Length: 142
Image (cartoon, rainbow, N blue to C red; front, side, top):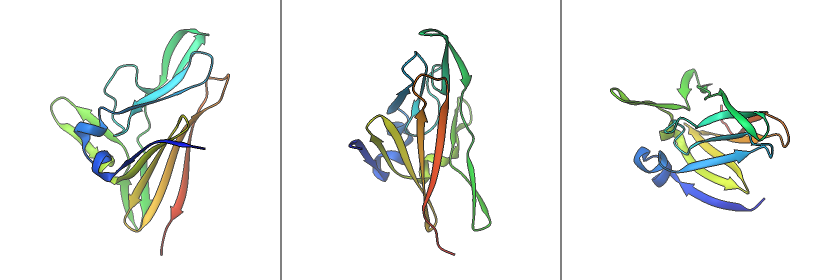
């Protein structure tokens, strides 16, 4: 699959930049998943599963987000971020993003967890209101 967009830590670790960059995955029947590279929602239509219940109309937000936390070397490491009006951004999962890329239309994040690398992809099943989050451990040491 051809890499269309490829962003490094200089972009992904800055919430002012990565919070404005958006991705979109569709299912071909009016449903979609969308969000920011940073992982926090900035628009009411961002979410992991916005289903077209009466395709292609009737879009309904069914899954807004996933609060992903990885346990590695005895530590709980959040990979997600939330943006709050008063508190700001917390937790700071976007700081763990080493790389973000689009492989075709598939968004792919590479997270750095100390000496480990974890890859996350968001995919949708064509013709169905189904979103998949796929995680692959690329590297880990004992």
